[in-house]
Length: 144
Image 1 (cartoon, rainbow, N blue to C red):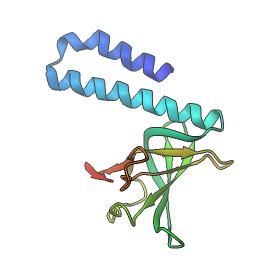
Image 2: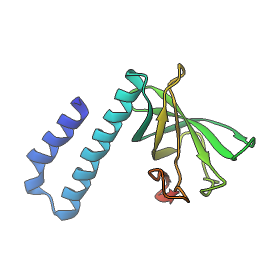
Image 3: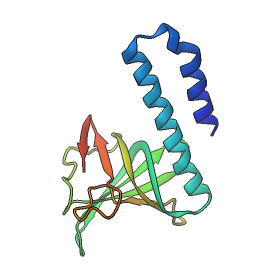
Image 4: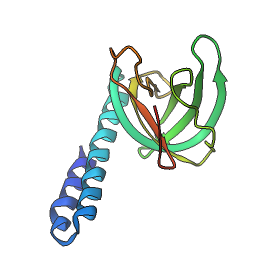
């Protein structure tokens, strides 16, 4: 919540001196802070089945999970220091083939809490249209 307040304060105090692209960028930063705050609440409250958005740095790339639907897996450290596992279904969405440790990745998907921090999955479209679509963003490219 504090991140959201600071982002909104920053928008309010500086928007008058920015051009339209600068104002748009600050709005995006405020929305990102609000989304990251929702992820932090889900982690702290041990929630599952929650749609979240956020971003982090890749600290570990894991082997693909090839049992059942195939998933590209990697661990992100978010700004709060928490770590989360990303399980990206590569049968329904493109693999991030250029992914490296240290890279920044933004995400939107379903969070499932676990004692290690949690997992974000459903980072892809739902071909049947019954579940909110998710995505990953890496180096400006959207994967869904």
